[in-house]
Image 1 (spheres, rainbow, N blue to C red):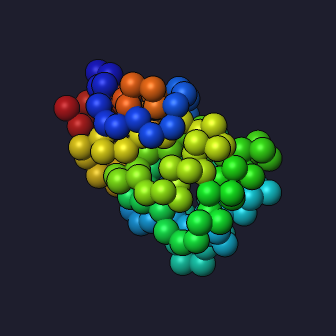
Image 2: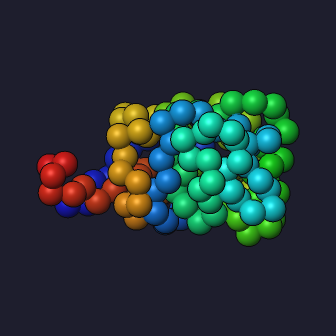
Image 3: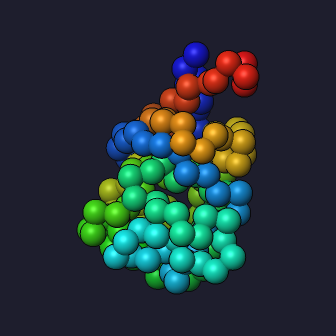
Length: 139
């Protein structure tokens, strides 16, 4: 069954991709390589994973405001996430998503950590909606 989960639209657009879920915040400044899209933050649960083309779900961003420009650089380099889901958007990630043209939503009513890695989902930043296919064991 496909669920339409309402949230709040942050950055306009619609995109689909496999979920890449982090239970902890992500810093784009020094935490993600803007040339490759690889998470390089030492000790991060997703260290070594690529954000490129994924729907990146994480609680919120952390770190310097330069993180906004790293998201923009990822977009320019073709290694940005297809879309972003946050529990609660904050200015650094929201600004980066907007200037990078990355659809983004937050406040979907469930913690991002409860979403299943690898599930292909669609984020609609215009409607503030997540299309998520529920597996039989989740029903």
